[in-house]
Length: 260
Image (cartoon, rainbow, N blue to C red):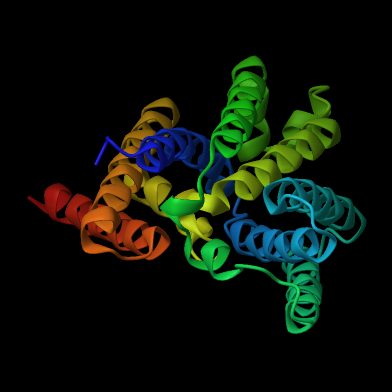
């Protein structure tokens, strides 16, 4: 398997994604923003079709468009803070409609590889892009870890204590959009939210502290993503679906382990 360059690229990208998505997802889940993953995945779909329409690398357009959508969601959330879920539904609906319109024009290219994930399409430049986004996200979270944790559990208290909550939230959602945008090559658009949420749900089932939960979420993400990529190679299945099934299997195993 490792004799093929595309498999080495896919496993390397999967390793980075399995670290990036659970770290970001831990904060999203605890902030009750799990729906953000679905919303941004549909935004990434629109970004992919825009890339194919204009003949631009869809990974780049997906990254840019998803970040812009994330910033728009945060802006609207601040303006209409009583209707946060409605705001995300509006953005998701618009992006789905936009993607369908562009795809129906016949200029959508190989959209299926982004919908379901494809280890064959992972190139070196995709790997570099994922590595850069992962490094920036981890650096940001490391620098502002205590403030982000405070904001996660008590946003009003964080505002009162002088933490620049709005600024940090805008940066965080932008990085979340970037994480989703660069992950779609491996996971596919349809199941990217599972990599954000399921490893975190598995870690939360252990009922440990925040730091341990964060580390365990990354470990479970690595198990699900890497085993999913390897299984998809030998079974000749879509990596996105295989990773999703592995994520659910790890979650079920955690319930059985905890019960025993």
